[in-house]
Image (cartoon, rainbow, N blue to C red; front, side, top):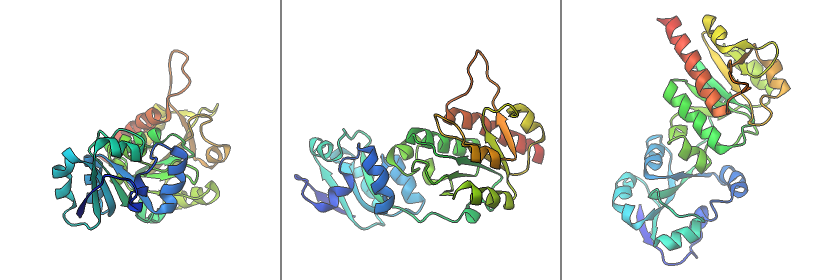
Length: 273
């Protein structure tokens, strides 16, 4: 890639990095613009390893020697400029080395994502990008196979999601599913038992559920405020809850996903051994 030193912000190719702190703008622009922002050298390296293609890179001078070798096989500009100018452009102080405007890959078909999966997480309408990223990190770290996100779920490739996931959103297979009228039958046809994590009177404690764990499980997690929709709960094969203490009714969705994933993954491995 070609190093381009900047002392002004009038190059239209810099527009990809403008006003990155405006969440509403990024949620609309990134998917429709066919790009996402990879933040930090580690995340950029993981994106490249996943086969994603950079449109350009924005880097602080001191990090240039570390970033350039990663980009040897790619075309496009590597913008380098004073820290104050980069902060003016992005809206925040860059302290993670570099940003890359990456071409957004096409989302794979559901059947391709779940073909060999035993344990997947379904995220329904999660609005906090931090929670989305944290779930991806749990999926990667605890040995689950994929993440499926609802049509209104926050974008996993929003830069905060990618950053919080430590780049695992670029490694874990994922795709968007349709509404439950279509997604539920599709998952069930693929052999998945739909386990909805929800606080319902007829819910089954997680420790009881994993005593006879299904071979393939889709763990369905709901939005931060209201939890799962009535349609999601009605579509599920089992409603599961995490037993709580001290009057606490539930965990944050990211924490709940980690607990549920560990329990189900551990039980599935034990059942196969």
